[in-house]
Length: 159
Image 1 (spheres, rainbow, N blue to C red):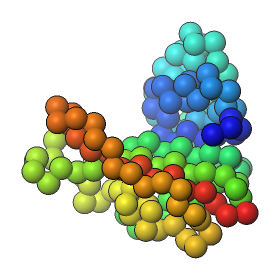
Image 2 (image 1 turned 60 degrees about the vertical axis):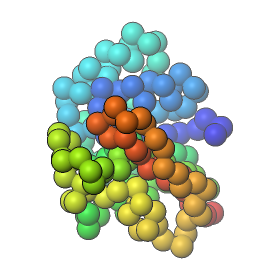
Image 3 (image 1 turned 180 degrees about the horizontal axis):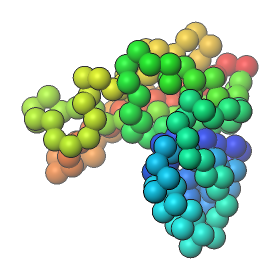
């Protein structure tokens, strides 16, 4: 993708936001944790990149972005958060949503309760007709991973 404006949702300690900035994106990154954002700011400074860090619930973010990137978001099913994230994508812009696939053969360890959290497949199913699906993919992370598979959805908002 050609770099533009991006919102990194659930930025944590900033690895994705920093990488995006290094690729030429104008990055805004939101996380609810002040501690995570403090660490992210330190990492961005060391990497000599500029990122707008936002400590807030993603529902409090406004604006429009060329890309809204949500890797492993904890979005409760039936919440308004997913619709809000979709509203932040400019017409012609992209939503990138990646999440772990639960492994039915393994008991739940740490992390979200997948029965309560929106999966990438459910995100795909919740997109309105104003979107075109560019990619849906199951990605193998490896048998030794705590989550051996991820799902990826890349969708473009129609102009």
